[in-house]
Length: 106
Image (cartoon, rainbow, N blue to C red; front, side):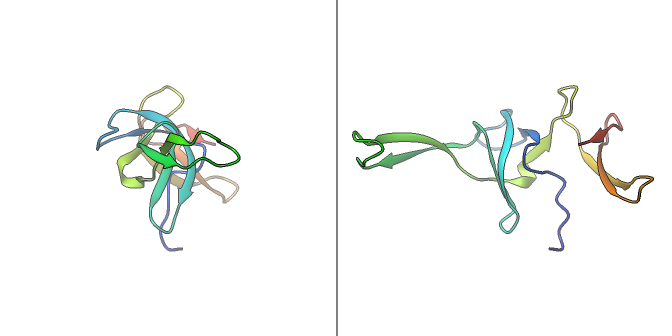
């Protein structure tokens, strides 16, 4: 994998463009192969389901669809969107940090 992804599963993000612009959510799943992520409550689509054993009535279900990673920005602990940088700490490990505040991102 040549690409260096700065966002990870569990990060809080805001959508920068598109139909869901301005919405915030947590990353539920990352697809590194297609550069997409599934974000909680963002980019909802309607899925029509047939009746089955789980859902005897069937119907329409709202479900999150994948969104491109380039449209997402990390939201830091102070609730402000920020870019993410990478640097090597004193132990030789690569850590992520907020470019706005300089604090380390866990």
